[in-house]
Length: 393
Image (cartoon, rainbow, N blue to C red):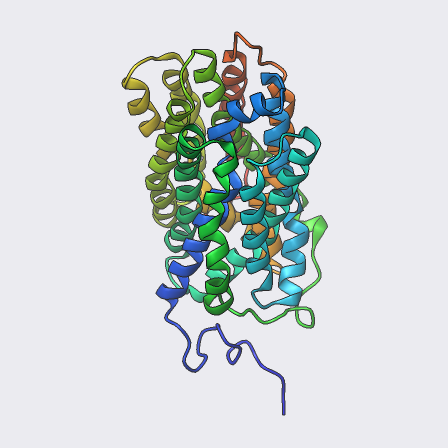
């Protein structure tokens, strides 16, 4: 008897009794929401966490870097994911992210807090490459738009969870943050059942052509790192900005939620526009518009701030789906690795940059961070113009 083929493995197209692609996509998107929610709610409670561990605001960048640096492992976990196949890494990633997120509110020790943040980053590194490869395996047409649907799950988690966590911390206390981990832990079994069961590629995968990929890889890493820095800096330092202004946790967290949830529209639109117009216009417009819209969000006061945040969100997230597809197209011989570079490695580099610019913050002035981020966002438009035409279709 021969071993299972790609067509006969459970969870792949054509398997007898396989779940519909839409159901699988919804299940993976839901798991993505919970994974990224538990892994990214820290900014919403960051001022309170800094007080709990008795650290100054300059440590905000360090904690955000610790949270996201583990995602730099995604190219490695993507390489492993393609070779082991299955769906175990998706389930393991969701489990680690949820457990780490549930324990953040318990510790009052800085070293242990950093360990938990690194654990969450490792969970994200395990989850994303195999999940993205699974999404691609169940989609045949309109991959840009459908990949956006999956990414929207993560954006909703990153948007809703900071405000949810801030409400828990404000009304119940930090120790009750374990509540936000419960849905993710309960969904691990769903992932094991419904996520695509990918066939391993260790026998048929082509060797990685590093020399051929070097230039587009460098451009992608540069572009995505700046975009990751922009997003991480906004979600990290906007709550600090509002804390400096004397506002409560929920106020700063709600601005983040507005940006990220409104960004869902941009995520979907970015995939659609990339399918229709090509990827380059999406990348350039997103970079320039983001740079311009940062300032109304951080300088204005009153209800108009949330209006500006709702406009910033869509343009900030226009590039998510096109960037992932570019990464996959750079590495057709290992698409999980390509996804890992576009999301994980770039997020890791962006995390290191957040750590550096975090030291520009003082107890009285947060604004220098936003000027640096806006300037870099403009520069990223130039990087987008340098991508090879073959990747911009």
